[in-house]
Image 1 (cartoon, rainbow, N blue to C red):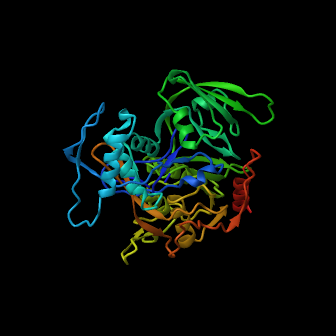
Image 2 (image 1 turned 90 degrees about the vertical axis):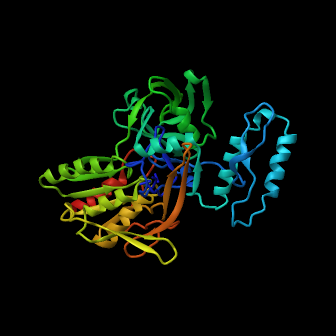
Length: 443
């Protein structure tokens, strides 16, 4: 999940949980964010999935002057002029537009605003960059909810086991957990009586599943589930509630519970406050044997949040990340204070769902402090997006730079290789990676 919007600049795409995930801390103009791409959604990724908007080819047109009334639909004013200084031939575009207006049999579907949106999406998609995307107002609203971590749903993180939609885990104290939904349950069907929806999940994409399961607080959704060891499917009726997804979760693990398991789920709007509480708790802990910094399945978020968290483990003035605009213009972001956790023994956990801001933090701590990374190779998201809010509520996420680790490594499409590889068996409920991290700190 993923950097959006100070405006927060973002590392983009939209992260989603059934109910949603990641970030804006500020809705003004210029922060940085990061996120992960669609083709990874087929993996059994704990907790986060992205919404990647489907687009088709087309050209941009401006709404303005020449009115083109269409039978049975609202008219729109279309400016057919070419922007000054642009040597672009729009003849083909207008030929297709006029032919559709004249010949398409269902005039009710010739909605100029929808056609313009399709053209804009096509223009953005023509760049071939899955992180530079145009979002309609409704899509942009979902993105903001995911980034803020506040939405209405039942509180489950979903993904795939093989090709079947499954529950990765219910969020603590969520409506799903309260009715007995368990990690690993296969989701075979979804019913929503309030919307007259009853569908099978066979072949369903993650974004569709998210949108189908989500709904207004107080309404009910019924999931048809199949649990390993059971022969027959069963149903769970779950009343949706307002959900607040945490950014940081702290617990203590190990035989004597003297290892801090510091799990960062996203780099979002509330990450800083939640991180501060966790750090104070760790500092007050006696006989601490070390910290497991768990960034598994963290798809990203605000780049600034990754810089702030990294500062906790470094001395003042250390470079956390380098922003490279590809024209010789580079900017280094460094720590501006002395970290409070510099004396603790730390190991970092990552996997294929750790992307962008997670990789920034992991790479910086390995390059600058020498912490070892454990788990499996990270995702490999090495670009930065700036999210722009448009007047009609739409959004445009634009790739504005690539980022490098302090030693100049660009992780894009390569990921970070762990120093200690530990595979996770998805067929069991044991957390082998966490167990290995605890053992590393204690021994």
